[in-house]
Amino acid sequence: MYWAGLELAAIGAVADNLKDFEWAIAAYDVGVSQIQRNGTLPLETARRRRALHPHLYALAPLVLLAEFGEANHIDLYAHANGFVHRLVNLSVAGLQVPASFPEASGVEQEIPKKIGAGQISWAPPYLRRFPNPALARVVHASPELSV
Image (cartoon, rainbow, N blue to C red):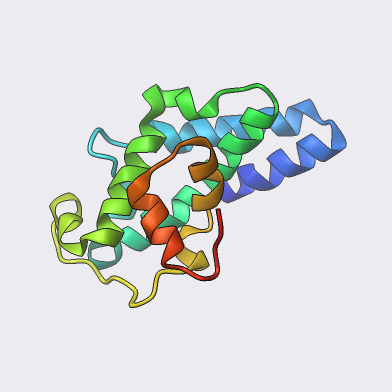
């Protein structure tokens, strides 16, 4: 749903279609309302050993939707008490210290040997708005990304 929301945000913005853009915001709200206090998403956590991957995957459309909101004077980052930041922080911690994510998922995580754009393409726009030294270190270690 988050990816569909991102597509409709782009279409709505370019076509000046408020209905599509509002649907995109509603999709964002569905996503961020599912984020738990510890930063996890329940359906993604159910993936057990691979829970970190879908958390990172969900962040891409959520962050980009929030950026569409910012460009249109809507602070989506603040929706749902700003819990999207909890999701970011949990995911970054999982990338840096894989042993930190089992607490959230209940099992040791499969972590890619190389972190690249496929996992953190959402990071550069997020970092421009919210400096985060831990996330910046992950991004700088990936030659595919720049801030």
